[in-house]
Image (cartoon, rainbow, N blue to C red):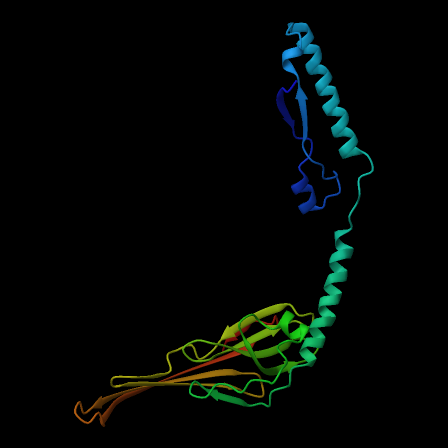
Length: 241
């Protein structure tokens, strides 16, 4: 005879699987169909029945969570993955050509990208998402510095600094100001990477007076030049000079 279903949660399989603690095997929930209509509802008998159920639960829980727990050595697994990733990252970097410094580009003509196979598994795995690779700025025992671009109203150069194991230390976008002209206004940006790894931006804003009929420039009212310089510190961070 069908009866009420009593759901008894013994272990949480999702938690144990995600945490990989090894303290308890992942098991499903146990359901017991108790034909309550056939049970004598005498209070004493009911208490005895509940005791038997509790004993059964204890036995199942004890046998599931206590016997032969599997131990996981998370560190060894992580180390193996880390070593593999490090080796693959170095192979990925070896595919990228070194830039000739000083490197100069502008918002009107940015940038010459490296001819790389985008279907290469290493390129697909490590190339920053949404970017195009320009080239390697620096590679030594301390750091790896990469130049990429991102699409926007104009291409935006971005410098990525990695440690030798492929961990991203810092990144910074350059030439992010509007490049172009509006009525009686013109802006130009230039980005320069020097041999000593100084990253400089030159933003030049021209304000002028136009002849509204011929749209010819009558006079230049003012010119504003903003220069910023950045370098990489000992911890691999891009800081302003």
